[in-house]
Length: 124
Image (cartoon, rainbow, N blue to C red; front, side, top):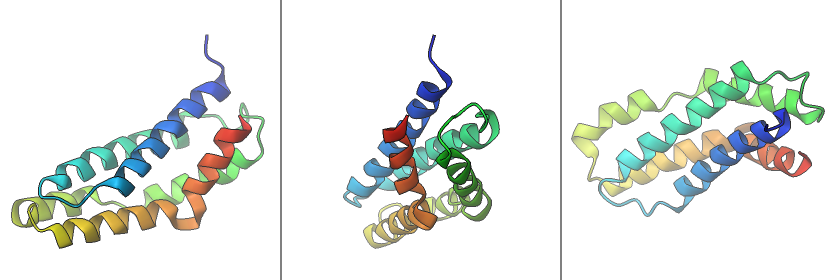
């Protein structure tokens, strides 16, 4: 059976993996679909972290702060609708894809959320 901490570690690792995938995209036509897929994964995992992980079952004190950062991200950033809107018109426009990708990365780095995730993964 997987411990609560190990479960959280796997979820956070998947978010980090998607984040690094977004950083490595080359901004080619068709990459908007990859952005959308990774955003859906990230948002899904963030929802799991904020709704299903009990902060009192994670002994590391930094989890409560990270949970707050995740809630902040979910409350303030929503790129899926923007991606859906631009897909039919600009799916081959590499500059718009690059701009969208940078906005997403910047949002994930807001309040050092990704850095906090990496630190917590090391602590668990």
